[in-house]
Length: 295
Image 1 (cartoon, rainbow, N blue to C red):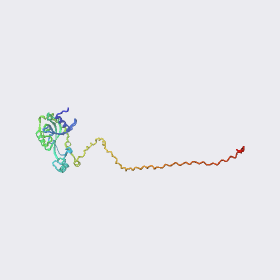
Image 2 (cartoon, rainbow, N blue to C red; image 1 turned 135 degrees about the vertical axis):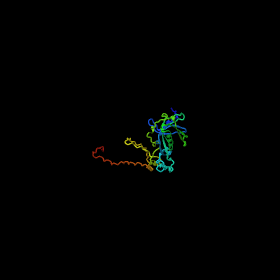
Image 3 (spheres, rainbow, N blue to C red; image 1 turned 45 degrees about the vertical axis):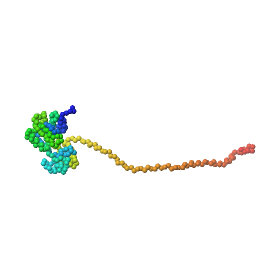
C-alpha cells in the first residue's frame, strides 16, 4: 500500500536514521521538527554518572556541520586546541567550543492525526550541558528513569532558535508495551564514534592547512588474512606525437625537350661498275678455217 500514517512515517525515518536492519539496530538521533510534536521516551539514566559530556567544535556547511572534540581541558581556554586558536584568529567557518550532554533514550513518536505512537527506537538526544540539571531534577522526583515513561513536547516552530522542550511523567504509558524497556542497543556504546569525531592535533592541523582531514585507514587485525588488492587501472591519456616541422620541398624543374632539326639520311654510295678489259681470245684452240674465216 502506498498510503501510511504519520506514526509509520516517523518509525521509518527513525529506523533509517538509526541504520536499522533485521539483525543490527544502530542508534539514531532524537528529532522533532514541528511545534507541539510529541514523543514518549524512556531515559537510559539511573544515576548522573550515566550521562556523557563533551566539548565540541562544529565545522561549517562545507564540512556538513561535522563536530570535532575540543583538545582544551574543561574550563580551559588555552592554545592546546588548534581549533580554539583558529577561532580566536578569526576563522568564522569553525564554531566556538560548546559543552554538550548526550542522553540515551528509547523513543516512540506520536502521529498528530491518529494520535498513535510508533515503535520505540534507540536514539541520542544532544542538548546543551545545562540540560543535565533537568535530568537531575527528574532523578530526584522519579528515581530510576529507565523505569519511567515521559512525554516530551516541542515548543517552537520548525527552524526556530527559541525552541524549548517540556518533559512530563505519564503514568498511563508507564508499561513495556507502550515503550520498550530493552536498552540493549546501548551496550558498549561509544558516544565519540556516534555524535562527534575525536581527531588528533596533527590531523586538525592538516585540516586547517588543507581544508580536509587525512583519510583514515582501518588497521588490519594481527594474523588476519588480507586478500591481495588488485591495483586499480590507471587511465593514461593517449599521447599525441608533436608535429615535426617539414621544410617545404622545392619541386625539381623538369628538363624541357630540346628541338632537334631532322637529319637527312646519308646517301648510300652506289658502287660504280669497274671496266673490265676485254678477254683475250683463247689461243688454246686450233684455228679452223672455213671459207677464209677462222673460228
